[in-house]
Amino acid sequence: MKKKYFQKLYVYDDKSESYLIQVSLDDYDDVYNEWDPSPFKKRDIEKEFNDFIEESSEDIPLKYNITIALFLQAIKKDSAKETAIISAYRNFYNYAVEKHRREIINLHKKNIYYLVASLLFLSIGYFFKGGQSVLTKVIHEGIFVGGWVFLWEFFTNIFIALTELRTQYKLYRRLYQARVEFVYYE
Image (tube, rainbow, N blue to C red; front, top):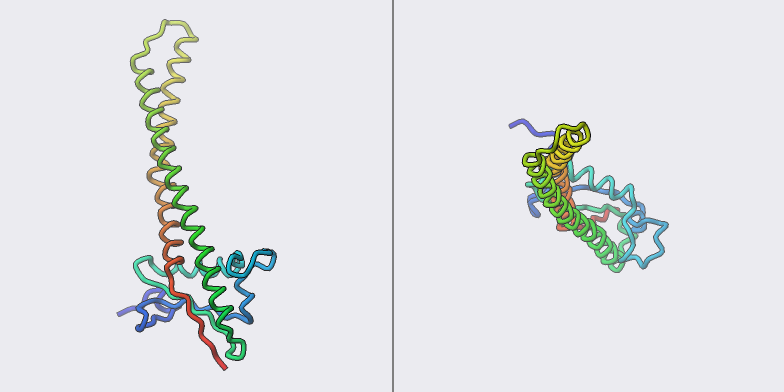
């Protein structure tokens, strides 16, 4: 069987039944944003670390589980720092999941508004039979155009924006649920 692109790049761990996203660290602090003054377990994740994790996760289809394997030298092993990193990781991706969930809810609210506005404008345009003056004809056409614009926004959001947001939501949810393990080497 021919291996797919992601199967060549990422190791499959039979024990955890997931693909490993392997990250080599010089120190535990490499995971954190150095400009964030918060305590370690509440700190933001470093942008480059997050970008690497996200891009790697996007390579692997969503139907597969992932494990984040952080490689460090054995002499640097510190259980308290491991716990802090896992906590920071969970906090960071939990926030991303909740943010995308709220964006999806807000988009649904906008879509209801766009659909109602579209139906209202198109109905008014259909039933509004103004006079023959240029002004009433312009208003009539403007109402129709407004209705079609709202309908266009509705369909754009349903078929494009909502699909993209749901994909991002699933990606972040998978990252949040991913197992984080530390691998130490000599």
